[in-house]
Each structure stands twice: as structure tokens, then as C-alpha cells.
Image 1: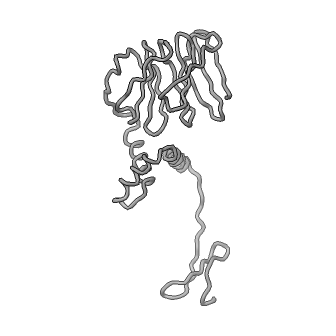
Image 2: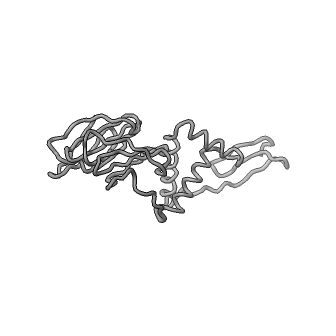
Image 3: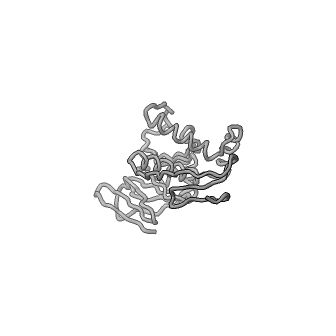
Length: 218
């Protein structure tokens, strides 16, 4: 054996230099077993990473500031909190945030990331907005004289859709729900009761009272 050998042979013998002298170790191959538990854990990490990437610079900076005394990164602190919250609560316990702006119904809810949430109401067709994960809300007012905001969907990049009644309109926002434009009634339907974003610019809408499915690709 060379006095300066380093590296591995056939991923079995590993040569290295230690303080006590040259060393050779038998490296046992580790089995890369993909189990359901391991896959679930990887999926959770991917979800946390996606959430972190959606954060603004100011939100990330706040995490970095909080993490600094703990000698970890802001990202690691976020992941720790994300997983702790996921496994500790998962919708098991609830608190009553009270009636919002004298509305009778909250028909729809949507999360936009960065703590921003939207709520669609009736019987006044209002859209409510929160920037602190639903703790407090602001009233954005009635939208285009509609009675109900029956559905909400987030498409990414600040773009949101809202489905209304009784005139079956689709509303669109490009600034995380702050302002809205009226895309008009769709195919003489009275209600846009559901909305779903499929990715790649494809959206689906479910209607009433004729039970149609509408599709958009732009």
C-alpha cells in the first residue's frame, strides 16, 4: 500500500490519511431502499421548500434574523416550524375568529402563499383578504354587484380567479387579490361554483344550475 494512497477501490476499500498514519477501511455499500415512509418524508420536504421559495425577501430575512442566535439558517428554522406545525396540529384544534364584516356566508377560501388568504362571501358578494395567515382580515368590498363569491383559486405569480353568482362571472386579479377585473358571464351560466388550477395555464370551472365544466388554457 502506498504511503500516500487516497480514494476508493470498487467502492469497497477506502484509503485515507489520518493523524495516526495511513488508513484503509472497508466501506459497506448502503442499500437505497425507497419505502412509503421515506417517500412521504421527501414529499413533505419538497412542500416546505416550495413554500420557502414563495416567500418574499422580507419574510426570508425575518426568519434569518430569528435563526441567527440559534446558529442555524432561516430556511432550517422555517422547515422545523413547518414540520412541527404539520404534525402537531393538522386541523385538530380550532379557534373562533368571529363573524367577518356582518357577512352571512363564507362560501370560498384560498391560500396565496406568504400568509395571504382570500375569502369569498354572501349575501353581499365581498372578497375579504388577510396577510397574516387568516388572523385578521380587511374588507375589499362587493365585486361588480354580485351577490355571491362562490369559488376562489390561486394560479401563481399573484394571479387569482373568483367565481360569482347569480350572474356566473369569473373575476381575475393579478396583484394577490387587491384589485379585480370582470371577465364577464360565461356561457349564460348563473353560477361559477368551483374553480381549479391544473398548471400550465389550464383552469377548470364548474357551473350551476346546468352543471357544466368550462376550461381555460390562457
